[in-house]
Image 1 (cartoon, rainbow, N blue to C red):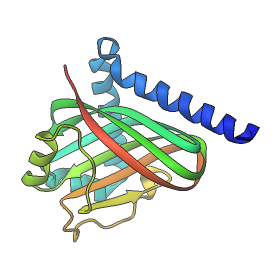
Image 2 (tube, rainbow, N blue to C red):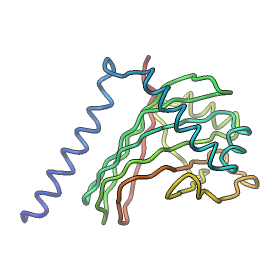
Image 3 (cartoon, one colour):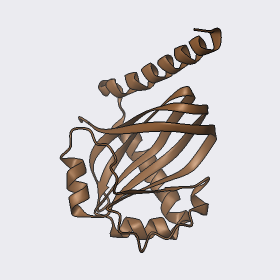
Image 4 (spheres, rainbow, N blue to C red):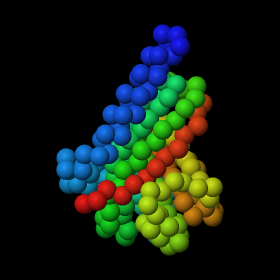
Length: 185
C-alpha cells in the first residue's frame, strides 16, 4: 500500500466516522435549530423556483434537509439532518447518511428536498426502518435554486428529489448509497 492510498484510506475512514458519529449524538440535537433551518431553506427554494413551489403544493409530504455536508477523496461521506413536513406541519425528524466510492474529490454543502408525490410513497417512507431511494425516483440538480428549470408538472414519478443552494466544489464519478433514518424525538 503506497503513501497516497494510505492517506486516502485514512481521510475517508475519518470523515465517514465523523459523519456517522454525528447521527448518534441524539441528546445534542437542537430540534428548534433544525426547524429554523428547514423553514429558511424551504423559503429560498419556493421563492426562487416556481416548479418547486408547484411540487410543494401537490406533494403528499416533503422531506427537507437544509444543510448536507459532503467530503470525498476517493471514498466519500455526507451527512445532514432535516424534517418531514405534511401540509406545512412537521411530523418527524430525519438524518441522511451517504457513503460513496469512485474517482471523486472535494468538499461541498447543499440543501436537499424530497417530494413524495403520492400517499403510497409517503406511507412507504414513514413505515420503513431506514429508507433507500428506489428506481421510481427522479432527481434535479442545480448550481443555485434560481436556476432550477426542470418542468416537473408532467412527471409521474412518485418521489422527486431536488438539490439546491450548493456551495463548495466536488467533482468526479462515484457510486453512492444514501440511507434516511428517523431521529427519535
